[in-house]
Length: 409
Ligand code: PMP
Image 1 (cartoon, rainbow, N blue to C red):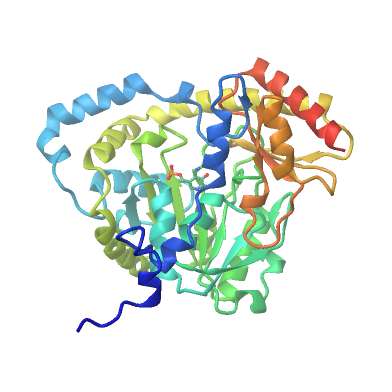
Image 2 (cartoon, protein in one colour; image 1 turned 135 degrees about the horizontal axis):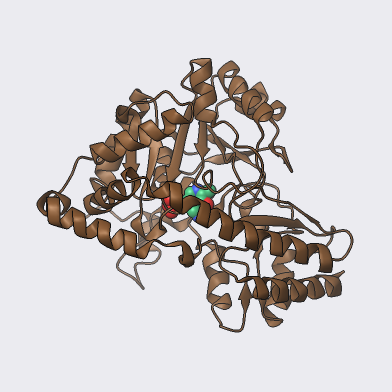
Protein backbone atom coordinates (compact mmCIF):
# COMPACT_ATOMS: atom_id res chain seq x y z
CA UNK A 1 0.00 0.00 0.00
CA UNK A 2 1.22 3.52 -0.82
CA UNK A 3 2.09 5.83 2.05
CA UNK A 4 -0.60 8.51 2.50
CA UNK A 5 0.20 11.82 0.86
CA UNK A 6 1.10 14.66 3.24
CA UNK A 7 -1.89 16.84 4.08
CA UNK A 8 -0.70 19.86 2.14
CA UNK A 9 -0.28 17.69 -0.96
CA UNK A 10 -3.85 16.41 -0.85
CA UNK A 11 -5.59 19.68 -0.09
CA UNK A 12 -5.83 20.93 -3.68
CA UNK A 13 -5.47 17.53 -5.37
CA UNK A 14 -9.17 17.46 -6.09
CA UNK A 15 -8.87 20.49 -8.37
CA UNK A 16 -5.33 20.51 -9.77
CA UNK A 17 -2.70 17.82 -10.32
CA UNK A 18 -0.10 19.97 -8.59
CA UNK A 19 0.37 21.71 -5.26
CA UNK A 20 2.43 24.86 -4.95
CA UNK A 21 5.43 24.57 -2.66
CA UNK A 22 5.15 26.34 0.66
CA UNK A 23 7.71 28.80 -0.67
CA UNK A 24 5.65 29.52 -3.77
CA UNK A 25 2.48 29.89 -1.75
CA UNK A 26 4.07 32.86 -0.01
CA UNK A 27 4.77 34.72 -3.29
CA UNK A 28 2.34 37.48 -4.19
CA UNK A 29 2.26 39.23 -7.55
CA UNK A 30 3.92 42.61 -7.76
CA UNK A 31 1.53 45.43 -6.94
CA UNK A 32 3.39 47.54 -9.48
CA UNK A 33 2.42 45.14 -12.26
CA UNK A 34 -1.20 45.35 -11.14
CA UNK A 35 -1.01 49.14 -11.17
CA UNK A 36 0.67 49.24 -14.56
CA UNK A 37 -2.22 47.25 -16.03
CA UNK A 38 -4.65 50.01 -15.00
CA UNK A 39 -2.36 52.78 -16.17
CA UNK A 40 -1.92 51.32 -19.64
CA UNK A 41 -5.12 53.14 -20.71
CA UNK A 42 -3.86 55.78 -23.18
CA UNK A 43 -5.71 58.63 -21.45
CA UNK A 44 -3.86 58.03 -18.17
CA UNK A 45 -0.73 60.13 -17.54
CA UNK A 46 1.39 57.59 -15.72
CA UNK A 47 4.16 58.49 -13.31
CA UNK A 48 3.94 54.88 -12.09
CA UNK A 49 6.31 53.18 -14.53
CA UNK A 50 9.82 52.19 -13.55
CA UNK A 51 11.06 51.81 -17.11
CA UNK A 52 13.88 53.86 -18.64
CA UNK A 53 12.91 56.13 -21.52
CA UNK A 54 12.93 54.21 -24.83
CA UNK A 55 14.02 57.51 -26.43
CA UNK A 56 17.47 56.73 -25.02
CA UNK A 57 17.81 53.23 -26.49
CA UNK A 58 20.72 53.21 -28.98
CA UNK A 59 18.95 51.10 -31.57
CA UNK A 60 21.27 51.74 -34.51
CA UNK A 61 24.40 51.28 -32.42
CA UNK A 62 23.09 47.98 -31.03
CA UNK A 63 22.12 46.83 -34.50
CA UNK A 64 25.65 47.47 -35.77
CA UNK A 65 27.16 45.75 -32.72
CA UNK A 66 25.05 42.59 -33.10
CA UNK A 67 25.91 42.58 -36.81
CA UNK A 68 29.62 42.93 -36.14
CA UNK A 69 29.56 40.19 -33.51
CA UNK A 70 27.67 37.79 -35.79
CA UNK A 71 29.95 38.59 -38.72
CA UNK A 72 33.24 38.24 -36.91
CA UNK A 73 32.58 35.59 -34.25
CA UNK A 74 29.11 34.24 -35.05
CA UNK A 75 29.82 30.67 -33.94
CA UNK A 76 31.13 31.68 -30.52
CA UNK A 77 28.32 34.23 -30.10
CA UNK A 78 25.69 31.54 -30.60
CA UNK A 79 27.47 28.87 -28.52
CA UNK A 80 27.27 28.18 -24.77
CA UNK A 81 29.79 30.21 -22.80
CA UNK A 82 31.43 30.21 -19.36
CA UNK A 83 29.16 30.81 -16.35
CA UNK A 84 31.34 33.72 -15.19
CA UNK A 85 30.68 35.58 -18.44
CA UNK A 86 32.53 36.85 -21.53
CA UNK A 87 36.07 37.60 -20.36
CA UNK A 88 36.64 40.83 -22.34
CA UNK A 89 33.47 42.34 -20.86
CA UNK A 90 34.48 41.22 -17.35
CA UNK A 91 37.83 42.93 -17.95
CA UNK A 92 36.13 46.12 -19.20
CA UNK A 93 33.89 46.27 -16.11
CA UNK A 94 36.83 45.66 -13.76
CA UNK A 95 38.80 48.48 -15.44
CA UNK A 96 35.79 50.81 -15.27
CA UNK A 97 35.34 50.11 -11.54
CA UNK A 98 39.07 50.51 -10.87
CA UNK A 99 39.02 53.89 -12.61
CA UNK A 100 36.45 54.85 -9.94
CA UNK A 101 38.63 53.69 -7.06
CA UNK A 102 37.87 49.97 -6.76
CA UNK A 103 40.58 47.33 -6.61
CA UNK A 104 39.19 44.36 -8.53
CA UNK A 105 40.24 42.10 -11.38
CA UNK A 106 38.10 40.35 -14.00
CA UNK A 107 38.16 37.34 -11.63
CA UNK A 108 35.92 39.29 -9.24
CA UNK A 109 33.29 40.04 -11.90
CA UNK A 110 30.31 37.77 -12.57
CA UNK A 111 28.05 38.73 -15.46
CA UNK A 112 24.40 38.19 -14.69
CA UNK A 113 21.12 38.26 -16.60
CA UNK A 114 20.12 41.72 -15.36
CA UNK A 115 21.03 42.87 -11.88
CA UNK A 116 17.70 41.44 -10.75
CA UNK A 117 19.43 38.07 -11.09
CA UNK A 118 22.17 39.33 -8.80
CA UNK A 119 19.53 39.79 -6.09
CA UNK A 120 18.27 36.26 -6.64
CA UNK A 121 21.76 34.71 -6.56
CA UNK A 122 22.86 36.69 -3.51
CA UNK A 123 19.65 35.68 -1.75
CA UNK A 124 20.22 32.05 -2.72
CA UNK A 125 23.76 31.81 -1.38
CA UNK A 126 23.41 34.04 1.70
CA UNK A 127 19.91 33.84 3.24
CA UNK A 128 18.62 31.04 5.45
CA UNK A 129 14.87 30.83 6.16
CA UNK A 130 14.01 33.17 9.02
CA UNK A 131 17.38 34.92 8.89
CA UNK A 132 17.34 38.71 9.22
CA UNK A 133 18.26 40.90 6.25
CA UNK A 134 18.86 44.60 6.86
CA UNK A 135 17.17 46.99 4.44
CA UNK A 136 16.64 50.72 4.04
CA UNK A 137 13.31 52.36 4.85
CA UNK A 138 11.81 52.24 2.25
CA UNK A 139 13.72 49.97 -0.17
CA UNK A 140 13.59 48.59 -3.73
CA UNK A 141 10.49 46.44 -4.07
CA UNK A 142 12.15 44.09 -6.57
CA UNK A 143 14.81 43.23 -3.99
CA UNK A 144 12.16 42.35 -1.42
CA UNK A 145 10.50 40.12 -4.02
CA UNK A 146 13.79 38.41 -4.91
CA UNK A 147 14.83 37.88 -1.28
CA UNK A 148 11.32 36.78 -0.20
CA UNK A 149 11.80 33.45 -2.00
CA UNK A 150 14.48 32.63 0.57
CA UNK A 151 12.14 33.54 3.44
CA UNK A 152 14.17 36.07 5.40
CA UNK A 153 12.85 38.25 8.17
CA UNK A 154 13.57 41.93 7.59
CA UNK A 155 15.03 44.55 9.87
CA UNK A 156 14.56 48.08 8.59
CA UNK A 157 17.42 50.52 9.11
CA UNK A 158 16.30 54.03 10.02
CA UNK A 159 16.65 56.32 7.00
CA UNK A 160 15.96 60.00 6.28
CA UNK A 161 16.08 62.30 3.23
CA UNK A 162 19.82 61.64 2.96
CA UNK A 163 19.51 57.87 2.98
CA UNK A 164 20.22 55.31 5.65
CA UNK A 165 21.57 56.42 9.00
CA UNK A 166 24.81 54.47 9.69
CA UNK A 167 24.52 54.99 13.46
CA UNK A 168 21.23 53.09 13.37
CA UNK A 169 23.17 49.91 12.54
CA UNK A 170 23.76 48.75 16.09
CA UNK A 171 25.28 45.42 17.19
CA UNK A 172 21.75 44.30 18.15
CA UNK A 173 20.42 45.12 14.66
CA UNK A 174 23.38 43.37 13.02
CA UNK A 175 23.09 40.23 15.20
CA UNK A 176 22.49 37.19 12.97
CA UNK A 177 21.84 39.26 9.81
CA UNK A 178 22.86 37.82 6.44
CA UNK A 179 23.74 41.25 5.00
CA UNK A 180 22.67 44.85 4.60
CA UNK A 181 21.14 45.79 1.24
CA UNK A 182 21.93 49.42 0.33
CA UNK A 183 21.06 51.74 -2.60
CA UNK A 184 23.46 54.67 -2.31
CA UNK A 185 22.64 56.59 -5.54
CA UNK A 186 19.24 58.09 -6.45
CA UNK A 187 17.52 55.30 -4.63
CA UNK A 188 14.56 53.45 -6.07
CA UNK A 189 11.98 54.45 -4.83
CA UNK A 190 12.91 57.74 -3.10
CA UNK A 191 15.52 59.28 -5.43
CA UNK A 192 17.68 60.12 -2.41
CA UNK A 193 21.49 59.85 -2.32
CA UNK A 194 23.84 58.83 0.45
CA UNK A 195 26.66 61.36 0.72
CA UNK A 196 30.31 60.67 1.31
CA UNK A 197 30.45 61.10 5.08
CA UNK A 198 27.62 58.61 5.56
CA UNK A 199 29.14 56.22 3.00
CA UNK A 200 32.40 56.21 4.93
CA UNK A 201 30.59 55.76 8.23
CA UNK A 202 28.57 52.90 6.72
CA UNK A 203 31.57 50.95 5.41
CA UNK A 204 33.45 51.54 8.68
CA UNK A 205 30.41 50.27 10.57
CA UNK A 206 30.34 47.18 8.32
CA UNK A 207 33.99 46.51 9.20
CA UNK A 208 33.40 47.06 12.92
CA UNK A 209 30.38 44.74 12.98
CA UNK A 210 31.76 42.23 10.43
CA UNK A 211 28.73 42.87 8.23
CA UNK A 212 28.44 42.35 4.47
CA UNK A 213 26.95 45.28 2.51
CA UNK A 214 25.36 44.77 -0.90
CA UNK A 215 25.70 47.97 -2.94
CA UNK A 216 22.98 48.07 -5.62
CA UNK A 217 23.75 50.88 -8.03
CA UNK A 218 21.98 50.71 -11.40
CA UNK A 219 21.51 54.50 -11.56
CA UNK A 220 24.99 55.74 -10.54
CA UNK A 221 25.94 56.86 -14.08
CA UNK A 222 22.76 58.95 -14.35
CA UNK A 223 23.85 61.82 -12.10
CA UNK A 224 22.76 65.21 -13.41
CA UNK A 225 23.31 67.40 -10.33
CA UNK A 226 26.02 67.68 -7.66
CA UNK A 227 29.28 65.86 -7.13
CA UNK A 228 29.83 62.14 -7.80
CA UNK A 229 30.12 60.25 -4.53
CA UNK A 230 32.61 57.39 -4.00
CA UNK A 231 31.30 53.86 -4.51
CA UNK A 232 30.98 51.82 -1.30
CA UNK A 233 33.22 49.33 -3.12
CA UNK A 234 35.97 51.97 -3.47
CA UNK A 235 35.72 52.93 0.19
CA UNK A 236 36.10 49.24 1.06
CA UNK A 237 39.20 49.11 -1.19
CA UNK A 238 40.65 52.14 0.64
CA UNK A 239 40.04 50.43 3.98
CA UNK A 240 41.48 47.18 2.61
CA UNK A 241 38.35 45.22 3.56
CA UNK A 242 36.05 42.84 1.68
CA UNK A 243 32.78 43.94 3.27
CA UNK A 244 31.16 45.28 0.08
CA UNK A 245 29.65 43.39 -2.85
CA UNK A 246 28.58 45.65 -5.69
CA UNK A 247 25.96 45.08 -8.35
CA UNK A 248 25.51 47.12 -11.50
CA UNK A 249 23.51 47.03 -14.71
CA UNK A 250 23.45 48.06 -18.36
CA UNK A 251 19.65 48.43 -18.17
CA UNK A 252 19.63 52.15 -17.50
CA UNK A 253 22.71 53.09 -19.55
CA UNK A 254 22.03 51.01 -22.70
CA UNK A 255 18.75 49.06 -22.58
CA UNK A 256 17.00 46.71 -20.14
CA UNK A 257 16.03 44.24 -22.89
CA UNK A 258 19.69 43.20 -23.10
CA UNK A 259 19.30 41.67 -19.61
CA UNK A 260 22.85 42.35 -18.60
CA UNK A 261 24.26 43.27 -15.22
CA UNK A 262 27.20 42.29 -13.03
CA UNK A 263 28.26 41.43 -9.50
CA UNK A 264 31.69 42.47 -8.21
CA UNK A 265 32.47 40.14 -5.31
CA UNK A 266 35.42 38.85 -3.28
CA UNK A 267 36.78 35.55 -4.65
CA UNK A 268 35.18 33.08 -2.21
CA UNK A 269 31.75 34.62 -2.60
CA UNK A 270 32.26 34.83 -6.36
CA UNK A 271 32.91 31.05 -6.51
CA UNK A 272 29.71 30.29 -4.63
CA UNK A 273 27.71 32.69 -6.83
CA UNK A 274 29.10 30.99 -9.94
CA UNK A 275 27.88 27.61 -8.64
CA UNK A 276 24.44 29.07 -8.00
CA UNK A 277 24.28 30.75 -11.40
CA UNK A 278 25.34 27.56 -13.15
CA UNK A 279 22.36 25.79 -11.62
CA UNK A 280 20.04 28.68 -12.45
CA UNK A 281 20.75 29.45 -16.13
CA UNK A 282 24.26 28.16 -17.01
CA UNK A 283 25.28 31.65 -18.14
CA UNK A 284 24.03 35.01 -19.40
CA UNK A 285 23.25 35.24 -23.14
CA UNK A 286 26.62 35.14 -24.94
CA UNK A 287 25.47 37.31 -27.84
CA UNK A 288 24.18 40.03 -25.50
CA UNK A 289 27.50 40.13 -23.64
CA UNK A 290 29.54 40.27 -26.85
CA UNK A 291 27.40 43.01 -28.39
CA UNK A 292 27.54 45.10 -25.22
CA UNK A 293 31.29 44.64 -25.04
CA UNK A 294 31.55 45.81 -28.65
CA UNK A 295 29.57 48.94 -27.75
CA UNK A 296 31.16 49.91 -24.42
CA UNK A 297 34.74 49.20 -25.49
CA UNK A 298 34.31 51.66 -28.38
CA UNK A 299 33.80 54.44 -25.80
CA UNK A 300 30.16 54.92 -26.81
CA UNK A 301 28.96 55.57 -23.25
CA UNK A 302 31.08 58.73 -23.07
CA UNK A 303 28.88 60.34 -25.70
CA UNK A 304 25.66 58.50 -24.79
CA UNK A 305 25.42 59.06 -21.01
CA UNK A 306 25.35 62.87 -21.27
CA UNK A 307 22.31 62.58 -23.57
CA UNK A 308 20.39 60.41 -21.08
CA UNK A 309 21.36 62.73 -18.24
CA UNK A 310 20.21 65.82 -20.17
CA UNK A 311 16.83 64.26 -20.99
CA UNK A 312 16.19 63.07 -17.42
CA UNK A 313 17.48 66.30 -15.88
CA UNK A 314 15.07 68.35 -17.96
CA UNK A 315 12.07 66.18 -17.15
CA UNK A 316 13.04 66.08 -13.48
CA UNK A 317 13.21 69.89 -13.32
CA UNK A 318 9.84 70.23 -15.05
CA UNK A 319 8.33 67.88 -12.49
CA UNK A 320 9.91 69.73 -9.56
CA UNK A 321 8.74 73.11 -10.93
CA UNK A 322 5.22 71.77 -11.38
CA UNK A 323 5.16 70.20 -7.91
CA UNK A 324 6.30 73.53 -6.39
CA UNK A 325 3.61 75.38 -8.30
CA UNK A 326 0.64 73.11 -7.62
CA UNK A 327 1.11 71.00 -4.49
CA UNK A 328 -0.73 72.15 -1.37
CA UNK A 329 1.22 73.07 1.77
CA UNK A 330 2.21 70.10 3.92
CA UNK A 331 3.38 67.86 1.07
CA UNK A 332 7.09 67.07 1.13
CA UNK A 333 9.06 65.77 -1.86
CA UNK A 334 12.66 64.71 -2.48
CA UNK A 335 14.82 66.53 -5.04
CA UNK A 336 16.96 63.85 -6.71
CA UNK A 337 20.51 64.46 -7.97
CA UNK A 338 20.04 61.83 -10.67
CA UNK A 339 18.12 58.71 -11.60
CA UNK A 340 14.46 58.30 -12.41
CA UNK A 341 12.34 58.82 -9.29
CA UNK A 342 11.15 61.24 -6.68
CA UNK A 343 9.15 60.59 -3.54
CA UNK A 344 6.25 62.44 -2.01
CA UNK A 345 5.24 62.42 1.65
CA UNK A 346 1.68 63.68 2.09
CA UNK A 347 0.14 64.85 5.35
CA UNK A 348 -0.52 62.04 7.84
CA UNK A 349 -3.88 60.38 7.56
CA UNK A 350 -3.82 60.07 3.75
CA UNK A 351 -3.48 56.50 2.52
CA UNK A 352 -1.99 56.62 -0.98
CA UNK A 353 -3.31 53.11 -1.76
CA UNK A 354 -6.79 54.63 -1.54
CA UNK A 355 -5.72 57.89 -3.17
CA UNK A 356 -4.62 55.92 -6.24
CA UNK A 357 -8.23 55.04 -7.11
CA UNK A 358 -9.17 58.72 -7.16
CA UNK A 359 -6.03 59.56 -9.15
CA UNK A 360 -6.66 56.88 -11.78
CA UNK A 361 -10.27 58.06 -12.05
CA UNK A 362 -8.80 61.50 -12.83
CA UNK A 363 -6.39 59.88 -15.34
CA UNK A 364 -3.11 60.20 -13.48
CA UNK A 365 -1.14 57.39 -11.82
CA UNK A 366 1.66 56.86 -9.31
CA UNK A 367 2.96 53.96 -7.22
CA UNK A 368 1.81 54.03 -3.58
CA UNK A 369 4.65 53.86 -1.08
CA UNK A 370 3.38 50.88 0.95
CA UNK A 371 4.96 48.01 -1.06
CA UNK A 372 8.44 49.52 -0.68
CA UNK A 373 8.42 49.07 3.10
CA UNK A 374 9.75 45.77 4.46
CA UNK A 375 8.27 46.33 7.91
CA UNK A 376 6.26 49.23 9.23
CA UNK A 377 4.56 51.08 6.37
CA UNK A 378 4.33 54.86 6.01
CA UNK A 379 1.00 54.91 4.13
CA UNK A 380 1.10 58.60 3.15
CA UNK A 381 3.99 58.22 0.66
CA UNK A 382 4.17 57.69 -3.10
CA UNK A 383 6.71 57.33 -5.92
CA UNK A 384 6.72 59.37 -9.12
CA UNK A 385 8.80 58.60 -12.21
CA UNK A 386 9.41 61.42 -14.68
CA UNK A 387 11.50 59.72 -17.36
CA UNK A 388 8.91 58.35 -19.78
CA UNK A 389 6.50 61.32 -19.69
CA UNK A 390 7.14 64.34 -21.96
CA UNK A 391 7.33 67.78 -20.26
CA UNK A 392 3.89 69.04 -21.26
CA UNK A 393 2.28 65.87 -19.91
CA UNK A 394 4.34 66.12 -16.71
CA UNK A 395 2.89 69.62 -16.16
CA UNK A 396 -0.67 68.49 -16.88
CA UNK A 397 -0.35 65.30 -14.80
CA UNK A 398 1.14 67.03 -11.76
CA UNK A 399 -1.66 69.62 -11.84
CA UNK A 400 -4.29 66.85 -11.80
CA UNK A 401 -2.42 64.93 -9.09
CA UNK A 402 -2.26 68.08 -6.93
CA UNK A 403 -6.05 68.52 -7.28
CA UNK A 404 -6.60 64.90 -6.25
CA UNK A 405 -4.37 65.43 -3.18
CA UNK A 406 -6.15 68.68 -2.25
CA UNK A 407 -9.51 66.92 -2.35
CA UNK A 408 -8.21 64.21 -0.04
CA UNK A 409 -7.01 66.69 2.59
N1 PMP B 1 18.01 47.29 -8.62
C1 PMP B 1 17.30 48.42 -8.66
C2 PMP B 1 17.44 49.41 -7.57
C3 PMP B 1 16.42 48.67 -9.73
O1 PMP B 1 15.71 49.80 -9.75
C4 PMP B 1 16.33 47.71 -10.77
C5 PMP B 1 15.43 47.93 -11.97
N2 PMP B 1 14.20 48.47 -11.73
C6 PMP B 1 17.11 46.55 -10.68
C7 PMP B 1 17.95 46.38 -9.59
C8 PMP B 1 17.04 45.46 -11.70
O2 PMP B 1 17.49 45.91 -12.95
P1 PMP B 1 18.02 44.97 -14.10
O3 PMP B 1 17.68 43.56 -13.76
O4 PMP B 1 17.31 45.43 -15.32
O5 PMP B 1 19.49 45.19 -14.16
